[in-house]
Image (cartoon, rainbow, N blue to C red; front, side):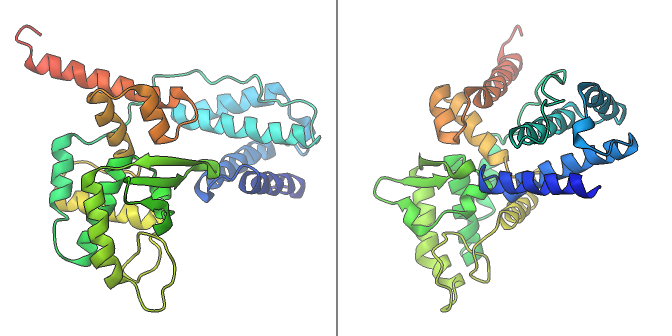
Length: 300
């Protein structure tokens, strides 16, 4: 990567972190996508960002298709480049965004994976022990399923964010946006039990932080730690599928809609800026209804 290109990349990364408040995970994807584009420009002997035109952007899109990348990956790459060049335009580095008019053909959206209610019961069953880590894991599972919060949001919960009287959480989401999320009696009982027993056991006398969930050393639990916990629960439950961090979030939304919740409420609970982000779950519920009909109707 040439020095001028790298300089602008670093400025853009700083912009994402400081002004947009994007997570390290998101910034990492932007960096990777832009560095991949810089490899392309190097192969095309493009030495100045000002030289890049619409036709170069179209050629890059063709290159991505030739690599047989998924539609979602290509769409993300194009979106990253559009944002990067929009930033360069704002900074007066370039006059026109070469990716502004590049459109990736939209394919069918992949429906989000979720757990059926019976599978959730199996997951809860494997963390019913009296061990402090079992009690903690039960509280994590109950809370993620009860609220639909992101794993990163779960790790950021502090004791002061919990209103036990009204069973409400203050959640700090993407871009430091705050929202209140209610949770039910099962999650409340699991959290209160965890705080009263397991958390005290796991915390060391020298630990003075106020984060709700801690690891076996009493330190704040990370997103990676929660992903490991969920994977372990899946293995214990002998469920024949892999888990990813968003599956419990998908399950939360799907089960709400299956049981009659309205889309706007689910949007607010999930912290989605746009209703279109929530509407994908209506496709899941329709598919669920179709399968139920085909399975149980005598003349289906």
